[in-house]
Length: 171
Image (cartoon, rainbow, N blue to C red):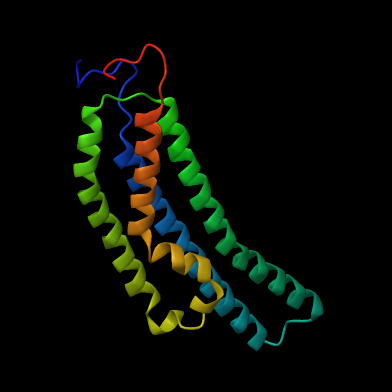
């Protein structure tokens, strides 16, 4: 039994998880900044006295669309977890790569915790005090990226190393 050979290539779950964590962090920061920018812009526009009922309805529609980004974040997270599972199932990997992924989990946890810390430092700024209440799902996801990355790593590893297909070398 050869532990280091795979007939279809190695699925490097760690890099996929890091890309997803960075993507979730970027979408979370973008949605909060966008809502803050739009509310500031509309507040300044309303102070000019040029607004009427049609501009108020447009403002409310844009702010409502910005608030939907909170649920887009949840959808993005679910699609990322399912995507990791599908990629893990469709690719084969040698059993030695499971040990490598376990050691990679330490690095992955450190990177994810760094993004948690950055997100927390950005959001706890006094500027975001009014905006944070409108994005509960985004705050929950982005302050728990380390648990999310661990979950994705477990799901991906389970899907990769339990898929039993014919012609697989090393199992």
